Image 1 (spheres, rainbow, N blue to C red):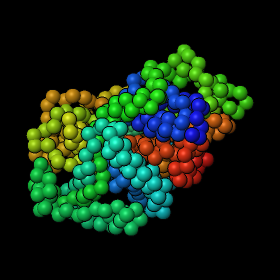
Image 2: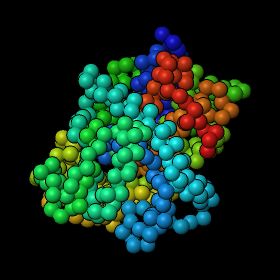
Image 3: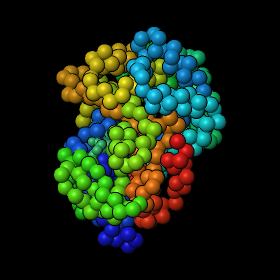
Image 4: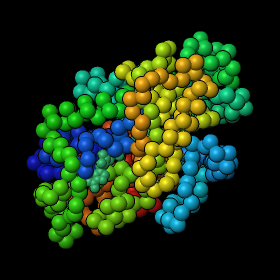
Length: 417
Ligand SMILES: Cc1cc2nc3c(=O)[nH]c(=O)nc-3n(C[C@H](O)[C@H](O)[C@H](O)COP(=O)(O)OP(=O)(O)OC[C@H]3O[C@@H](n4cnc5c(N)ncnc54)[C@H](O)[C@@H]3O)c2cc1C
């Protein structure tokens, strides 16, 4: 087995750290994964759980900046940026704005596609083998429109998704919507249905993955914060974390949106911004939607899980702000009210926020850290960390000398930033 008996420390017990640990253990590495808090308690906890190749296009569509600014002026936008003097945020936004071109958007989508496609099939295998129990549901995703004009405009996008990425979709006219999804209110313009997307319950995914990792012999250490590296020339030989020293042959940093906070220790600051989103979780309303829904004009998603129901959305660029703002949660409810007969239920089980690890081109960093021969990063999965995790793990295992997964690492290099 290649790499056998080499010790790897994975920093970050989110969905990306889980997938990296899984693939590394499969490749014969001896893996320890540490998290500064509880396993799976970061952004991987309360997200919507969509595994969705349909979202292959990044946010950097032509016209995004203008549309976002206009909607922010209206005051009910899911987007918000707190104006402040943070040169890194402005640089990030400038880079984002420059990427809002058709050719660059398409390039980023081509870079995201292999991670999305491979991850979906890897998840399916793990679920079929009984490795992951995560409320897996193959129901597709329905994008809903109030505006006829925007519904029509999506014809072009659907064609692009079919031609470029072989993604199947089907237009549903307004008068056919209730036959397809009886919980919807009448009067919507229509929708686009993507039959091949899947959804899961993210916290179940994380707890089940932990059980599997422990069966594979992976050591999971909670409340163990990464402190510093012990280096010998350009190699990391140990990591000090949680007051202990871990000897390592390889190191993988999978700390999501918090990765830039490790810049001093790693000698490299990755241009990742925390894009804060919110969700509210409750029992399934009666009646409950039969499939995941995206309220396109409000940018809010409804996720009907087997054991609950979640509304999620919002994108705030406010640094590492950890307040839960009631107004943002209210916007989730108000959006759902416009589309669903029973938009929510009581009691609310959880009000949650998470920092998405946002890169300006929508593509993650999966690469060796500059100046360090045996330290790697897998971070910056934007709005799709759940959807891209297994393939990210496969690529990390490949880069560290495990099995060749046949994934081209070039698009995910740090040097592009
Ligand atoms: C509202 C919302 C809805 C979303 N919906 C979806 C969806 O439907 N589908 C999808 O694919 N994606 C979705 N996402 C995005 C997805 O949640 C993220 O892309 C993904 O969770 C990122 O995973 P991660 O492992 O990189 O980060 P995290 O889950 O945040 O994990 C990083 C871990 O590193 C740990 N850590 C950080 N610093 C240190 C340190 N110094 N020492 C030790 N440990 C450390 C943290 O404690 C954390 O547990 C959504 C996000 C939000 C906010």
